[in-house]
Image (cartoon, rainbow, N blue to C red; front, side, top):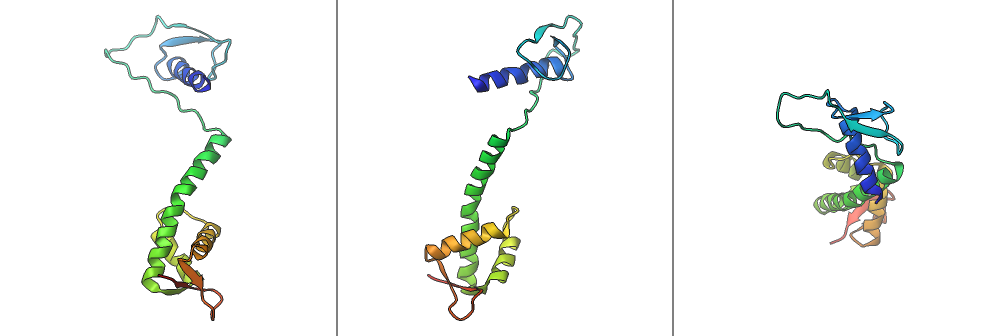
Length: 143
């Protein structure tokens, strides 16, 4: 029911507050409240037969934004893992800094070094790669 209410408010805002004002709103303001009244704008004329009325985009709430970011991050984890395995499979042994620079070159989306470190740790835990026993900041690919 909540999304229907939000959709109705967006549609009314488009009809009453947009460039083409098909409805008149009382009181005149940009926000739609429960006590607002709407009536048909008799002065409204348009030369074309078809009228395209765009819905005004509502801003995402912080909750929705965080949920979206989380879903995107989940999707990107697989791409990061695949890139790490691809690089390590090709190079067999690589230092941490070289691996990170190679990942930054290959990945098309912004990523934090801390997130890359988590994905590397995850691949180590799953036995795709291991830390080099002789060099502390190097990794070896495990087939």
